[in-house]
Image (tube, rainbow, N blue to C red; front, top):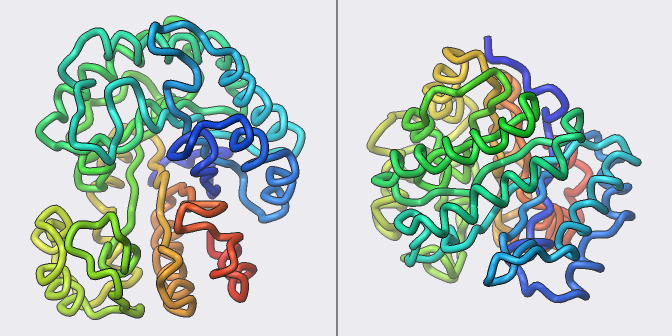
Length: 341
């Protein structure tokens, strides 16, 4: 049986606040406030995942920016006040952004040293909150060929954290944007306070329909849900790049449904069970261009798979970012959607 991720069963991402945004003072102070955390606490979720960028904590010379740490301090205090737990997710680090092709981080030791040092500082500042806080090392390593390089870097960061704290939980994901089928490339966890993670936006054809950043995706593309497996496969092959087709090469199904998701997650579940550690889907969601009735059905199916398998999860995302659950697009289904998180 899969080990339970205590305190992090279901949550919501706070995307676009401290990462993937223009880092202005106004943005930092107004995009997410204490009132948002209070509202989220009424949803029945148990945690928030907070994506952050390296350069809100350090300048180009490696000097500490206390204003960045103060933002995390505030979020921790709000979460404690409203009985929510929190994942601190380093979404972008020096030399690495998951949606850019230039990734010197994996090849330059000084950038890796900055990464390790930041995690040491996070541990020194925040490991005292280990009852409600987890560390997620890095969001969405892209190139599967860099899996071993990533394992080496991650080992250094884990060692630095463990020199400060033996028991704060550390989350780590694999390559191909944290694909479930890349969990197998992660090294054995160093202790029982590790968590393996993956993300799931399958089928991309549905969850990212009309998304301008997905190569090959027609800007007027629309498709409902559920989808027959053969239709999803053929349409994906017609429009999207080979990386989006891989899922159809590694598994067969009759439809994209609960059983499809369970089969897709099964290898990652088996690996986590082998090591007796939790498994966490740190991102999943549907773009705000999809039909809302179809969105609800997708959430029903993937949520059922998570519950059947005992996988912890965190939906993308609370506000804006093309996936915002509190935005106008989801207004008519928001209450039903929240129940399916």
